Amino acid sequence: MEVKNLFANLSQVKGSEEFLTLFENANVKIERIVSHSSPSPAGFWYDQDDDEWVMVLRGTATTEFADGEKVELHEGDCLTIPHHVKHRVARTSEETIWLAVHVK
Amino acid sequence: MEVKNLFANLSQVKGSEEFLTLFENANVKIERIVSHSSPSPAGFWYDQDDDEWVMVLRGTATTEFADGEKVELHEGDCLTIPHHVKHRVARTSEETIWLAVHVK
Picture (tube, rainbow over the protein chains, first blue to last red):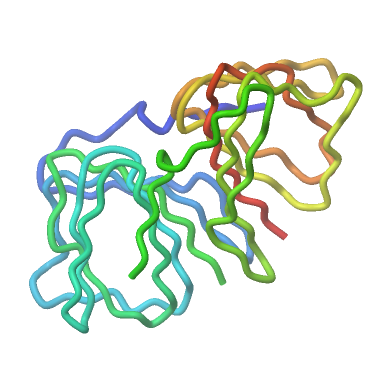
C-alpha cells in the first residue's frame, strides 16, 4: 500500500498554484492544490460541469461567488460548490493547502 | 454557501466511532470519521464494493490488511484502498479524525 503525505513535497514558488492528483476514475478526481498568495486572475470565474467539494487543510482563503457572496475559509473548513456555480479564489494566505474532490 | 468545520462538533465518547456525511450522490460519499481509541472488532474485516480514498486529518492510526501488511498513518497521510481489498483498523489514537471518500 502506497502512503502519501499531503504536507510533504510542497512547492515553494510565491504566486504559484500546484496541482497533485491523488485519485482519479471516471466519476471522481481528488487533488491537492497548494496556493501561494495566488488569487484567481482578475475577472476570471470557474464555471465547472462537476460538483466540487473543497476543504482547506492548511492556511486560509477567501472564495468569491458571482452573486457577490464572499466566503472566508480557515483550516478545517469545507464547502460544496455545485456545478456551474461561478466562483473564484479572491485571496489565499502565503501557503494554502486545499483538498478538492471533483464529482461527476 | 454553507461552511462546515471538520474539527468542530467532535464526539467525545472513548471507544466510539462517529460518522458525518459531508457530501453524497450516486457516485461518491465523502465522510468524516472520528475514532476514539476504537479499533475494528477482533477478526472483523471491511470488504467493500467501492474504492475508498482515506486520509488522516488528525491523530494516528494503524490499518491492517488481510495479507498481513500493516500501515501506520500520521497526520496528512493518505491511502487508496481498492474495492474488495480486505482491511481493518488495528489501532487509533485517542482522537483520530479521518476523511474518507467512497467512490463507486
